[in-house]
Image 1 (cartoon, helix red, strand yellow):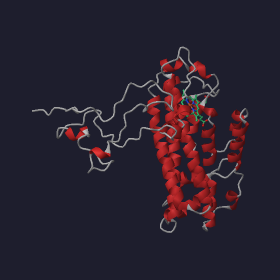
Image 2 (image 1 turned 60 degrees about the vertical axis):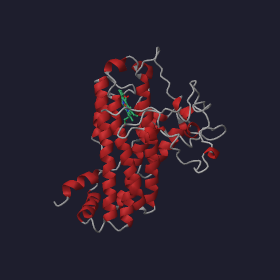
Image 3 (image 1 turned 30 degrees about the vertical axis):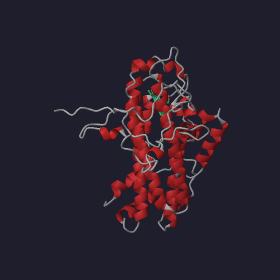
Image 4 (image 1 turned 180 degrees about the horizontal axis):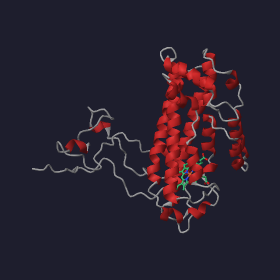
Length: 346
Ligand code: HEM
């Protein structure tokens, strides 16, 4: 006989009255019945211990799935008046009111477009936070803790890469119906993307021009342009460790992108061919190439999603669009870490 899904015969522990659509600080849980069973009515039980008489999951037929709503809510905190709650801690009111589609009447798919960009920007924020921490650690010769940080960056990048498939559900027919609301707004004006590029070493002063109207951001990007990248710091570290990093590389103009240098390639050849002697340098090199590779995959996926959505139309930011994005795919941040693959054993 097929086991029947049983519903709890007693009323559930907590009643959920119909709730008005609340504000973020609103009344999701307000008005709930007190969750704590009266300890005096069960003198032998601990007030927070699960009470088999009140726990509907105990009445589940063996082998069946628990019925919806049958989970044990004993101990749930419901009186949050004047206390820090989830929404307050996370500033959800601000976060969830920051999606403001501009199409009129509002186009169904504009929300997807906005959220995809916003979630990417949130992850960018964390990437910047982590990269800055890693740069600081390398500067202090603390490679070990920076490995964990860079592993985290790699996992964030995996999220960002995976996320493109959500936006890829936006068809050209849908996008064309609200694209006009963007005006000249474009991802090329993402200051966080530019900051990541600069921290990773892809320096280009010309890109500051699109931030002239934002003096604080312009200043932050200028500082990053004029500061050493994570690769500059790593090469300085290798030099401090006694590896023969060329002087002109160590003293280079850091506002320019790093260019592949035979002396740096020779250093990495030494590291990769003697990994036991240079284990930490070797591990760092592999962490950096992880990030470099993930970055180019992200750029590739962006280009392809753009192509399937707008074809070869020009970008809203004014560039040629897909041809502009295509040329970026070839960029690598750490050229010698790629070149060393060819030289090993040669
Ligand atoms: C249908 C969706 C998208 C389209 C059609 C699109 C299109 C474009 C185009 C054409 C460019 C070149 C600049 C221009 O002329 O506008 C660009 C740049 C860029 N986009 Fe997107 N994009 C889309 C989604 C996204 C998303 C979700 C992000 C995530 C934040 C993003 C981030 C960027 C960044 C960072 C750049 C600058 C690349 C660089 O210069 O390094 N894009 N996009």
